[in-house]
Length: 177
Image (cartoon, rainbow, N blue to C red; front, side, top):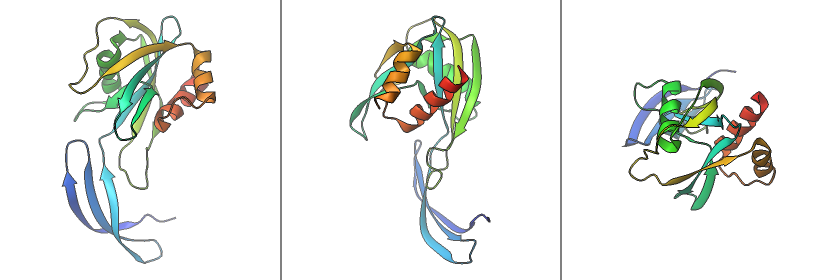
């Protein structure tokens, strides 16, 4: 299997949270694919975060694009120059107010490798304790909730967690427990 060869590229949108470019590519069979649209997003982190009492921390928030109230694992965008592990520790402190004894990378996934460039790093953190109040971004409104491992398994079984990357992260996390 050979990779495609990018022979031309033009940016249509360049914003902080999303960049859209259109590429012209030469495929492995020699044909030319015009107008291949690629979204450049920043890389993300998310966490399977367990408290000292062995409860999984989830967050509930509104997601505008899908128009849903979503139950999710905590996480967010990796800042420029930031290491993924540093980002997940920061995101957990900001979103939940919890600090953790351990942090282990358990999965690296591409949200949509056909059209997006970013990766999501999923971490398993253990020994969480509430150390301070939330410090949310300006437009971030979320509730922190704790669930037993069995309750999370039931939520997954009943398809009560909508975010695909978070579902995948939870399955990776449950396999590590």
